[in-house]
Image 1 (cartoon, helix red, strand yellow):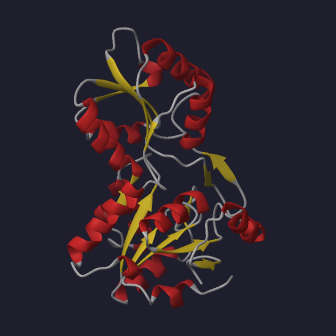
Image 2: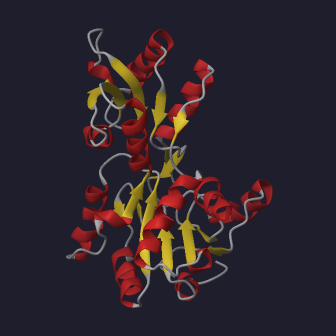
Image 3: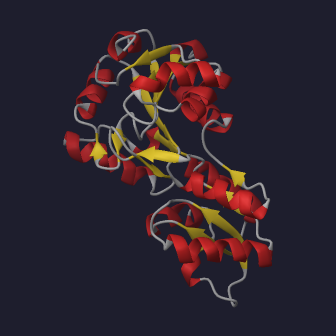
Amino acid sequence: MDVSFWKVAQRYSVIFFDSYGVLKNSQGALDGVPDMLKRLTESGRRFFVITNDASRPPEDMAALYNKIAGFELVPGWRIVTSGTLCSEFLREKVRSGEVAYLGKPSSAHYITQAGLTAVPLAEARDHHDLKALVLLDDEGFDWFADLNRAINLVRHKHLPVVVGNTDLTYPVSTQNVAVAVGGLARMMETILGSHFICFGKPDAMMFTHTFGMAVSENPTLRRRDVLMVGDTLHTDILGANKFGIDTMLVLSGNTQPDRADVMIRSSGIVPTYVCDSVLT
């Protein structure tokens, strides 16, 4: 589109990447991404993955790229998930007991990591002393039965609801998207007239946490040395703009090329650069 990712990347010492729509979709890593990340590392640049994905532990996410590359290309500690911040909240605020959740069994990692007992919502019964309901992923449960169960559980027990992923949709291919757990949470909020506790971009916590990790490697790092690359204006670009780092919108995921200009103008969310993909 407007610029080449590679030419722009050479102006920065650290790159923050979104995951879905930038490095991968629901089918796996995009063709050419492992080679791009290897080339980036060999050029002396550091990178981190910042993702609104609480479906599995960071180590499992890293394994996807490492399997394709054939070696440890992406260490798990370089992947910062919204689930990580959700887990920290649960550890500090809920502290002990049982927590019901919606999501795949792998997403329960963020509950057990906080020292709590994870109970799939479909298995929650009256004898469970639930302290909270956590929405982690859009898979692993019966949408009709369990969403209705979740709504009524909150109505009757007045449980706090924590959302580990604020994304409304996520790319499943270059043309199509699917409803993410943030979209389900938004629907539930409207039905219940409630405001849930949400973690993920565009909240500044994601960027503050990752920037702190980058500074620990390079104490002289400045925000002007960091580029955020994402496919969604209202999460990746807005959050990074607020944090004060440069941004690149790529058109390989949520933002379609024929609508990008209109979406930028209508939203007022302006990226520093616009590019077809990270493979250009």
